[in-house]
Each structure stands twice: as structure tokens, then as C-alpha cells.
Amino acid sequence: MYANVLSAAVQGIDAYVVKVEIHLDSSLPGYITVGLPDSAVRESRERVTAAIKNSGFLFPPKKVTVNLATASIKKEGAAFDLPVAIGLLTASGQVASTPEKKIVILGELALDGKLRSIKGALPIACTLASNDIDGLILPRENVAEAAMVEGLDVFPVESLREAVSFLNGETVIQPFVVDPEEIFNVSNNYTVDFSDVKGQEQAKRALEIAAAGGHNALMIGPPGSGKTMLAKRLPTILPQLSQDEALETTKIYSVAGILPSNQPLLTIRPFRSPHHTVSNAGLIGGGTVPRPGEVSLAHKGVLFLDELPEFHKNVLEVLRQPIEDGTVTITRTKLTLTFPANFILMAAMNPCPCGFYGHPKRECRCSITQVQKYLSHISGPLLDRIDIQIEAPAVDYSELSKLENGESSEVIRERVKKARTAQSERFQHQKMVSVNSDMGPRDIRKYCCVSDEGERLIKAAMDSMGLSARGYDRILKVSRTIADLENELKIKPEHLAEAIQYRSLDREHWI
Image 1: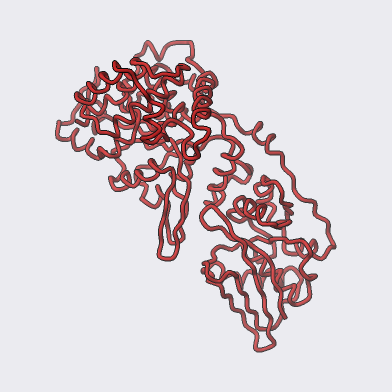
Image 2: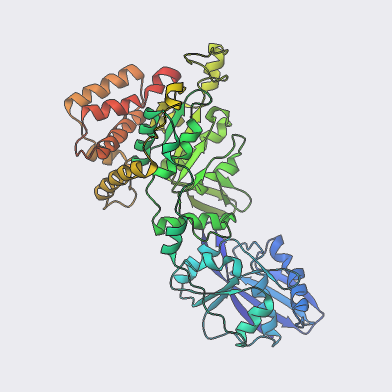
């Protein structure tokens, strides 16, 4: 006796269809799973057996062979429990033969036959919608997430018995429907705002430029100067996620298994702030079966590294590829996966170990050697990849005691959106470039032309600050963004002067 059921699995942030084949043989009873299963898949034997019996069905007293095709790809996770159970019941005649429509089945079974949620429902639904699949049966906890994809009927079930009843035509389950626009309108509000920040006008201006051009930024200042407070508010001045961006970001969280159960779609830009003890795999991604790391979870949002020199040096160095390419490629013996990692790097640090080097009122207790050793944790190549470096000095009492609030995030965001619109029009025919920070050498030569006066200004800056060729390119990119914020077609000397000012830490601290 033979039966097959369609299921699916995730690889990276994409998915593929798996055919679950069941063969029942009249020889001695037994159970074997083939098709490169991992331990969780092999253990499904016990869950499936108990769930079938506790749901009131008869487990066939035969030799059971389960094949997960295609057999050349390693299968992992417990999402094959439900399709295996349905396949066994179909092969033994307890479930009607496979329906005419192509339906994919997913779900982890509890021992009593109830269904538990799975990882990766959204990327699976996206793949099925583009592969001529008519419907998807999965646990109710995942149904809203999967229903975000158009062109696919999603049927929620809560138990093995309900799934069998639906497949036998005894129960009618209507496809679950969600309204993406309503979800966007309800859950796209931030709980913090730039108007909460007192003082630090120069740092606010720098973050506005960073948001407008997608530039990486570093703030350096004493403890309590508001660096973390500013960084947490950077996502609030970025343009709202488009629906395509929201789907792409949500797929990463779905695969990682950290998508909130009450939030089927991420509608605000991610803000990730890993602790400085994070490992390479935690930051970049990895594992025996590669999983997305913090850089991928910050996709389309902000990755905030507080106390930057406290991170392990080798951890910081692996940031180079995602900063440059916007992706992370993880290679294992038989598998290579690429995760998206297009984020704005926002970093903060003290000027020295005690935090008070250069403070106007507090005495620094660190020696010059200690300061140099502290700052040397950040390599020149990494620093070159940070477009904007800004000092965040201690805030005076007069600033803190002001009653009036500063500009709100909404006001700043409108200026950022106008600058981003200008960039979208400029790069509309280029697939790999969407904001100024993405520009390559050819784009810089085309869109960042400066006058003779501007050239002399940059030359003087490079000579005095010892900037690299990459630092030169960064100045031009930032000056292009400043011009966009002021709705100027040409880069003026004052735009260049402000951009050079944001490389001042090269001279003052690292050189």
C-alpha cells in the first residue's frame, strides 16, 4: 500500500516542496524514515504514532517506510509530523485519496493529536504561491502569517482529527483572509520619538543624514550623553517599510522562529542591539544548519552596536562583507546559503576606557597607552566603512531643563522621504543601487561631480587627515546626501565641508 502527501521545507529564507511518500508492507511491523532526515524528523515516529492512536485512528500494524523526497537535501524540524500522519492514514484507507487540488500540509503534532506552530510559514507560502500549488493546511498559529501571500488558499487546523475531517469532506474550512493594509495601519507606530531627546543637535543632524542616504554612523561620547537614546530613535525617521520590504524582513524572522504570534507581518523597521559578548555565529549567522544572525535580523532596519570597542575584534572584522555587499554567505560542507543583510550600522562608544577623555568637567583616569589600546580594537578598514563619525558631548543643564521639545520624528522623516525620493528617481534604472550609500566608483563619478573649489577642499582634508581612497568616496557619498536633503542638484562646497566634518574622528582619535 502506497500514498504520497505534499509538504515543504525551508532552506535559508527560501522554501522547496517535499513529497512525503508512505509505503506499508505486510512484513514484520517496523518504522523507518529515509531521505536525509535529522534527529527531529526521525523522532517524528513516536509523535505520529501517539497522535494517531490518541486521535481515535488505527495505526497500521505493518512495516512503515517514510521517504522525504528529494532525498539529496537534508530535512530538519518537526513540520513533517502532520503530512506523515496523513500519509499513513491515507495508505491504510482511513483518509480519502489525495484531493484533485494540489494541497501542501505542514504541522508539528503533540502526543494528543493537537498541532503546534512551525517555523518558516511565510517563506513556504511565498514559494507555494509561485509553484502552482492551490492550498496550504497548517496550524492555526501560523495561518495569519501564511495568509499574507496572495494567490494561495490557507486552511487553519488545530488537530490531526480536524485535518482528517477536512480532507475527507466531512468539515468545511474556509480559507483564512487577512488585510495587509489594515495590519500596516494598526501596527506601524513607534513607541519612541526624536522629540524626547534634549540637546545633541549636531548628532541629530548627523542621524538625519544617515537615514536619508542609508549611511553607517558612529557616535563617540562620554557615558550618559544620550548615544543609546539617539540610536533607538533612528528607525523612527526612516521611511516606512513597503509591503515587499515587510514581507522580505518577516521571512527572516519567520525562519528564525522569533516572529511574534500576534504579529503576522513586521511593519516597522527592525532595531537589533546585540550584547558585546555576541559570537561570530550570533552576529553573522551560522550553525550546523545555517540560521540568520543579527545582521540579517536587522535587514531593512538598524543594527546598533553599543560600546563598540568591547566587541571581540574578530567579530567586528566579519562585519565587512555584509556592510559592503548587503548579504551574508555562509558555507558548510554540503551547503551554501545566502541571507540578506542590508542594514544601517549604528555604533556608539566612549572615547576611552573610563569614558571621560576630553570631558570638560570630569577628569580622565586613563593613560595615553590605555586610550590607544582601547581605540585600536576598531581597525582602520572597519572605520573606513563607517561614513559618518560624530561626537556626542555631555549635555548641559540648560539643554536638559528646556521645556520645549525638539523636532518630532515625523517632521524629520518627511525630509528624509523627500531625499530618498530624489535618490529613487536617480537610481531607478539600477537594480543594485537604491540609496547614496550603495553607490559604486562609477556611480560616484557620475553623480558626485564637484567644482574646482570643492576639489581643493577635499584635497586639503585628505592631506591633513590622512584619509584613504575609501574615505574619499565616503565623503562624496555623504555630501551627495546632504545636497539631496537641501534639494540641490549640484554638490556645493558647503555640502563637502559638512561631510568632511563627519570624518573628523579619523584625525582626532585614530591617526
